[in-house]
Length: 153
Image: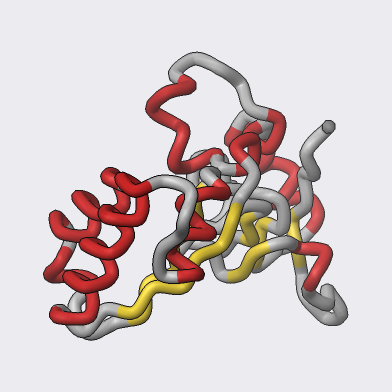
């Protein structure tokens, strides 16, 4: 909760007057934000109250959603230096470009993150503000010229 509070205060210029989607791999933090507090931890309740009161003063509204830690690829990237994550497998860009040239001009990379997208427009398996949309299986592909390199696991 402290990280959410401090990060929100640091980026006030971007958040002020907006609704912020908090995606967190800590279920307790998500619950305390959603319920505007809780009864299990005085410290956590105090921090959530501080966050939400500060946010109200700044015109910020929070929505909160739990995300599995293993799907929190972008947020955890710095702590996983050198670790290959299942959703990050990709073809070498040179090989991908030769495939793309041979089979047409796709407009969207369906299974990518900002770290491995082969095209400027991509669909991410995890929440990512740079992605055109999230979860390729939740969107129709009809009439859409796509590049796909699905994760292996």
